[in-house]
Amino acid sequence: MNKAWPYPPIVAHRGGGKLAPENTLAAIDTGARYGHAMVEFDAKLSRDAHIFLLHDDTLERTSNGQGIAGDLPWPQLAQLDAGGWFDAAFSQERLPLLEAVAARCRQHQLMANIEIKPTTGYEAQTGKAIALAARELWQGETAPLLSSFSTVALEAAMQAAPELPRGLLLDEWHEDWQAMTAALDCVSLHLNHHLLDAQRTAAIKQAGLRILVYTVNQPERARTLLEWGVDAICTDRIDIIGPDFRD
Image (cartoon, rainbow, N blue to C red):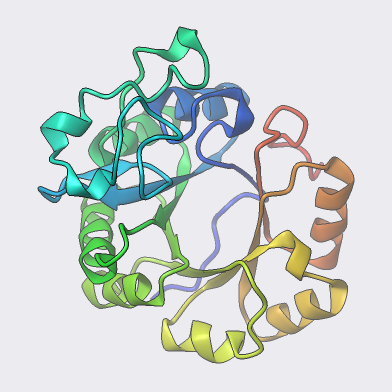
């Protein structure tokens, strides 16, 4: 796998941060409208193996649906309102298929961090399916950065499309981070920013890994992390931590 890192220092979390309903086409449009060069979003499988965007296992928080999303077929999921929870102005927003997201990224010339977010119990199937789809949908574009908290999903992604770059997500510090990332041939470690200090940042960089941190919404904290050597900041405050923030 190519270990190149073509990605910008600021990434729009879940497409449009807190300015649009997360993981929707409207969110991706919002990230682009604020001038961002890269968006992060969460992808999973429907019961009939369609890849669509949703963060949670369940539908209640970010749609008018109920229950576990992965238990439902795509025709049922496609009918849900995925924007009205955020604001009535977005009530026509739907859960988007990965195919539509890739087209919108291409339209806006956006790079992508696809977080593989498997329904519990479907880690391997989800990792494989998303990696194969990403390879096809982003052909000729900057390779999407695949990430996941699930090592099973990342391993399946590695087996299916080894050339796509991978990042391991950690919400708690693991002393064996180097062995974990090496086993998955990762280019990057994606960390809750609270886990980092200057020493840990230096050690990760010394090991040849890039660092993406989430979710950083305070400009001063973002500035500190970048000074330490963090490569990418994922933020909800896409309005105040903008694409030219580093400048």
